[in-house]
Image 1 (cartoon, rainbow, N blue to C red):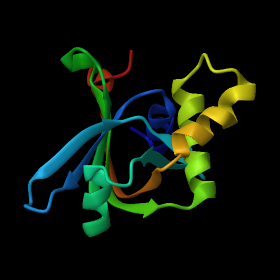
Image 2: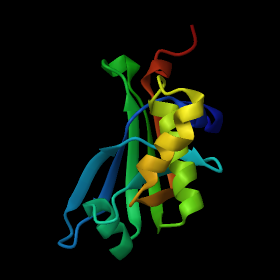
Image 3: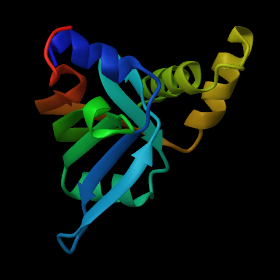
Length: 145
């Protein structure tokens, strides 16, 4: 995918698989809803969640967002890099607000901030800093129409 296609794909309402390193070297893999703050993927989670514990110890992570039900429709974006774990209230509220706006379409605009405030309570924000982006779009394999 082109950089613009990657950006458009990531901004669609999808679930991101987040892989971190456990203390024993095994991989912890979990699906997360995510938003964007300053154009960068970010999600919020409980500070004692396994992914948060892992990322404080070792900030490396790999994230995968994918789509498609048949081989010829598979598309995906892999983000390889590091994460920043933060309890900054402004960042946390911005992350939670973005998640609410992306995944809770039935929430009235007037209620977004209140819901984001509830999501942000006792949480940390995890910002994904991609150093490498890998993408694929099998819909392009057949060539131009």
